[in-house]
Length: 196
Image (cartoon, rainbow, N blue to C red; front, side, top):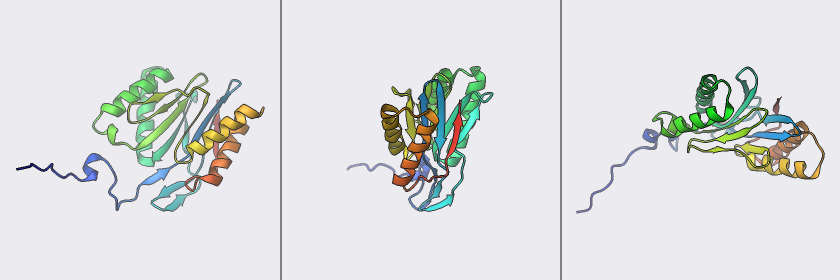
């Protein structure tokens, strides 16, 4: 006789129930050019199929204002990760690379953290990293990185502008986010920009 596997609900595994809408925050872009580092994020927060906020701030300055961090995904999960990341930055005295690796390790192995649904984009004057719950710590080759549903649009636009114009990092970020906002229904034109 064939044994059947026990059925577990998605909530037991930290996933949202199909009937429970998740709060999502979407597009964040980081552009590094000629010594400047700019992070831009849109302001839209979506609950299920409804926009519930237009002017959310998805970017924070951390560790004595020297590090920028942006999030995409579940808002509550992202705030938990910001808090953990800030603690890692304090523990490693602002060493972005070490803090990013240690957070990614915890995120992948910790029972609570591994169910958090968000992505982080973090940057200082020298480095940019994309962090995920799979233990990924990715440093982009080109100095341009993006996360969220509108991320691919923003990143493609920013890369094209960087390759074919002399625009500053800030102007590239602004224009790329506007393009993403026109293409992605989860991204709006209420853009927050932080620069190092």
